[in-house]
Image (tube, rainbow, N blue to C red):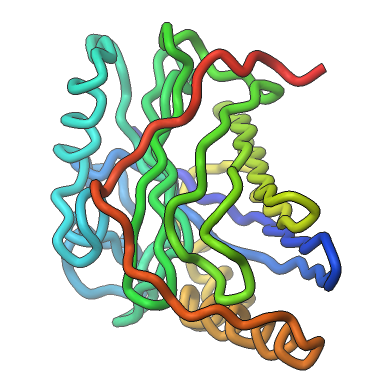
Length: 259
């Protein structure tokens, strides 16, 4: 598979007693983590480069992952029919020596359509939890389908470990539209990731490095800047809790499509 480059936008909006919203550009790649044959020179697998992907950083516990083998195992344990499926990773690549991903997505595609995905969530405290999402009968996931998962891991010090995530996952050969709504009573956050998919090239990766320098380090800096804004607005600050066990949880089933 040709590695694809998502030059997208992410939007976050907090609702409830204290409101805050922001939007910024991000760079993701969509790839078969086990197949480096179609990568441009500026993107490497498991070695240093301007941009790089490391199997050990994905799939399984943070810092000790096993890449696609982990995702395949999660699918097999749930009875997913693997024949003919592409197992892909949508993630922010490491920039030079730095790596951090608030969320990556493992995706099982068949005929270009997503049938299952895992939201691999990392927090800034070193924790990871993975939310496995699929319909009970493994039918295709449409953009207007609502996949609901209980929130189990501490992510933001300004939000409780309570409530639920509602995922809307839209993906085609040319674009990505992901919507995650966190709901906890009157409080919550809307997060989106949208943008076009195109083959990753040295030109697109070089331009991304110039337009959004330092890659994931810039994202981490923006996360902390937004935390400062919420602190100034006197949002309640909660202590971090350890990541839950087991590593992976499943969404609720039979939620149907949005009206």
